[in-house]
Image (cartoon, rainbow, N blue to C red; front, side, top):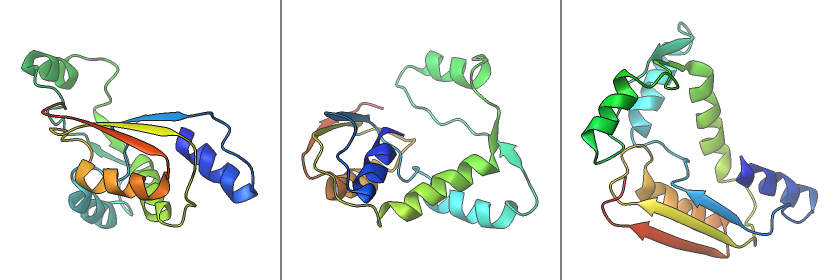
Length: 139
């Protein structure tokens, strides 16, 4: 992740390797964060993957149906290792340094994949030169 490269550089005392960054609906916490954590704690010792559920991430219902039913690039299972990595990223995020790299964060207000109400303020705390663009009713 681009932002992680910037955090690692800052910890070494180096500048961010990018002149600026753009974050499009960045993932820190998922929209179903509590459920993900409960399920992870309950099932990670005994399962390597779980069936993936698809949430509507577009106002175009035929596109949502395509993603869930026909898109061969969409995995039908979710790796427990991926969930573990997401949780580690989220739990370690608070300890990351504040970055001064110019950044743009674009977020739709109807997003059902990421917990944008939590994520946007969290990214604002870590990016001192952040410009935020919220797009009403965008997923």
